[in-house]
Length: 128
Image 1 (tube, rainbow, N blue to C red):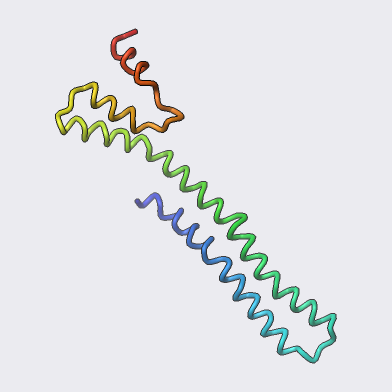
Image 2: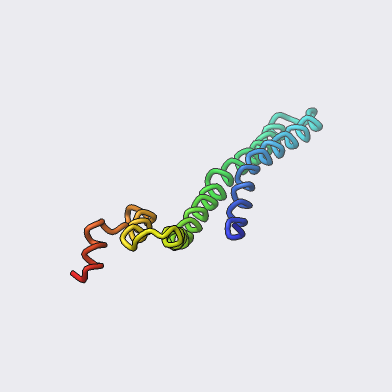
């Protein structure tokens, strides 16, 4: 579970970025209200700058950090898959199941894209 730490941190950051963008926008609007006596061109620029905070928070959250966290989670799960298969083998063996059932337990734990067919496994066991 220590391996998942950076992924959780990135996901938490992605979840927080839109809120930080909104805080930046509110602070920008407060700053703009302090300069309400300025000409409309300057006020427009200040309001636009305030909205950039919201845009940046959403862009970073959903366009960069969120997808990065999701991809990191996929990589972690793919790396851990072999350990789950080994765990299934050990558990099935400890329960005293016969070898073909142990092998089937291991085979069923493999992702369907990489999973050998039932017949392929037992043909391999028979040496065919």
